[in-house]
Structures are given as structure tokens and as C-alpha cells.
Image 1 (cartoon, rainbow, N blue to C red):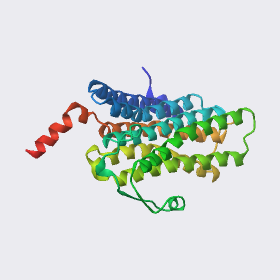
Image 2: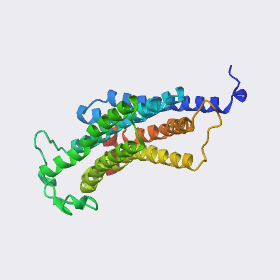
Image 3: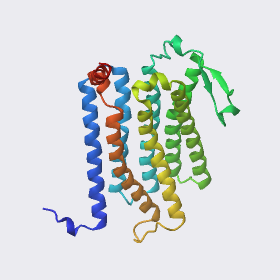
Image 4: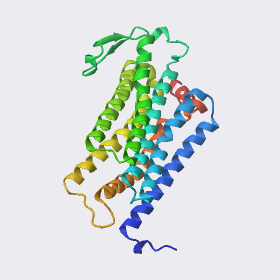
Length: 294
């Protein structure tokens, strides 16, 4: 039997990360199993399954980064690209889920009469490209969809170019910053469209608890992103240093980020179990509402 008292800090960190990944996968499998058992609405539940797999994918990919802690910059960029490309798909599927809740079909040009003509108020800097107030119609909904799906295209294209350029040895810092600006602008536009959609339909979406669902996605995306920025700052200020000749400071930074993501995804997996529970499809939610009305 393993003597835990004799483990060194790196070993403890590794085993804690591995256990966290297993927990994340366990909670996600429980949630996925519940939806598969109560498979009543394939259109909505397919989107939900894609969304809830985000946490375990982030955890597993981050753990792979820990297994190869001495990996090259291209290797870590590849792992990061996997997470961010899946993130793009999740954002698009979330909008599709909201459309489904409201019985909106873009392919069949179906927009319920009860939501047509509503006002959408844009804020700066979107007012530079759009009127401050626009009326909701099929064209406006299609525009919101395009704003979301552009990230699904731009993110993989940028990732492919970044990896290819690194492999051929041409990846100066100005080019790295250019890709960073493009990707951040793209994801900001995608998330902006989701926020606008939520504000316009907050009343209709309320029974589906969309805020909790959205915060699960936004929490993972922004928490991991700003955590990376904070680590960049700590490295630049000299707080994070490499005390091993075989490890670069950037590799230490990547390891810290990967450990934190492994631990954090457990929390998001638990939150997702409540935000995306299978109650609406198993009849459990309806029973609770009936009890409240009695």
C-alpha cells in the first residue's frame, strides 16, 4: 500500500490532479446517463450533452499536459487549441439550445409571433456597426446566429495556422499578439450575442434556468482565460520561477495552469449536474411544479 507521507509535493499534486479528473468524469457520466435514460427531446438533449462534456474534456486535456510537462510550445498550443475549439462548438450549441426552448427554427424560417418586433438595445462598441435599437425579426435572429457561429470557424482556423507557423519556425511575437486579438474579438462577439439573446428573452427562458446554464459555460471560458493572464503577469513579475535546469519557466506556468484546471473542472461538473439536470425530460420538474400549485 502506498505511504502518502513519503510522497513528494510534485507527486501529491499529480495524484490530486488525477483524482480530480476522475471525479469530473464521474459526475459528467452520471449526468449524461440520466439524459440518455430519459431521452425525450433529442434536439435539446444532444446540445446539452455536447455542452456538459466541456468540463471533462478540459480536465482530460489539461491532465495530458501534466503527463508531458516538458513538452514543447507547439505541444501546449495544440492542447490549448483542442479546448478552445470545443469551447467554440459549445457556445454555438448553447444558442441552438435557447432557440429550441423558444421554438425558433432558422432553417424553416419559424419565428413565433409572440416574440417578433421586440426591441434589442445594443451598447458600445456595437453601436459603431449597428443601430442602438433594432426590432427583432428573422434577419436579426439570423445575425445573432452568425455572430455566434463565426467563432466556431475562426477559432479552428487560427489554431491551425498558429500550429503550422510554429512548426515551420515562423512565429514572431507580433504574430502571436495578432492571433490573440483576433480570437478574443471573435469570442467576445459570440458571447455578446448570447447575452443579448438572454436579455431579450429572459422572461420566456426563465423556466429553463438559462442564467445558470450560461454561467457554467462563461465561467469555464473566462475563469480559465483570466487565470492564464494572471499567471502570465506572475511570470513577468518574477513570482513564478523555474528552480530546475531541465524545466523552462513557461513549462512551470503551463503545469500550474493545468493543475488548476483539473481541480476547477470538478466544481463545474457538479454545478452542471444541477444546471443541466434531466428533470424536464424525466417528468420530475413537472411533478414539483404540480405540488407547488396544489
